[in-house]
Image 1 (cartoon, rainbow, N blue to C red):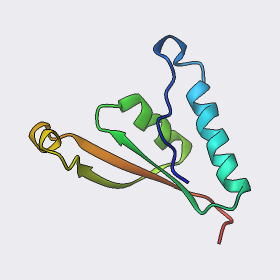
Image 2 (cartoon, helix red, strand yellow; image 1 turned 90 degrees about the vertical axis):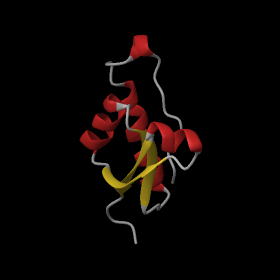
Image 3 (cartoon, rainbow, N blue to C red; image 1 turned 180 degrees about the vertical axis):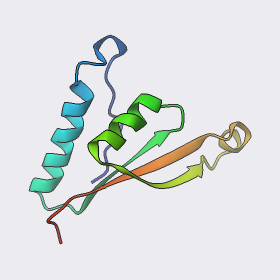
Length: 88
């Protein structure tokens, strides 16, 4: 399962909404027998990266965005993976 574009409006951050959304996605995947949940995030999204790591996501790989802008700006993407226990 790929988690895409999870966002919480700035004035609602810090209320546990993103954590609840991420846990809901993990529960959804677990109930359907998925082996893992993966997501990508930009290097500048410090709060999001910290949240994912607190929830148990692990850095899977890092790469520079494969575009001219990505290479010029050294725009690094981090892929996170959450392996779901108890799945084959």
